[in-house]
Image (tube, rainbow, N blue to C red; front, side):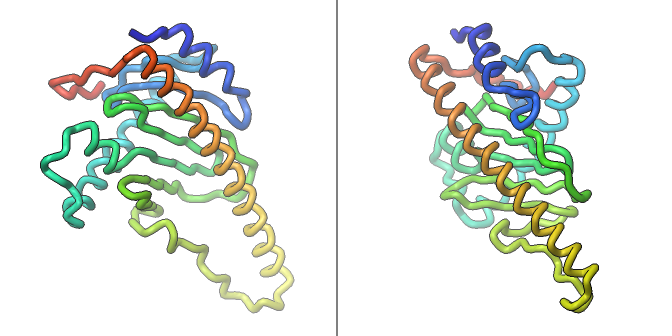
Length: 214
């Protein structure tokens, strides 16, 4: 068994309300295991529902990609397959980042992180899986994240307003990239701590045979 009180304390100690706004651990089916305190539990459940619906959609899409690439090996067990197909998902909103990491096949760690204020942007979702392959979704379109770049500005480079807006956009993008790196490093570190604790306790989240969702 796991010590839920200790998990709540660990998550709370690693939150600051700003850069690391909130953590929670949940099953893919919506059962909250632990979370930062204090928290509005109703609002947290709503947030978890949004994250988990997106995780499921991305996971199904990742499985389809794996089949298309003939990487969905039929002889793998569920835990290996789940971990290799998709282990991390990042949701980038205009006002926050949400990072999801698979701790175990049926257990997810979620970080809600704050971002610097900037221009409005569309939601971007990036998933990571087998062999580090990344896929991003923006404006409903799928693309390799390595190939995504801002659209070129149609105004001449000599346009003062064009230069100013390009400079501002570049600065904002750089800040957002830096803060996402900070979020990612924190997620990696806390993932390792929690996994070690689970291994010591010999804890494995049971699989729901009915695969119920909320």
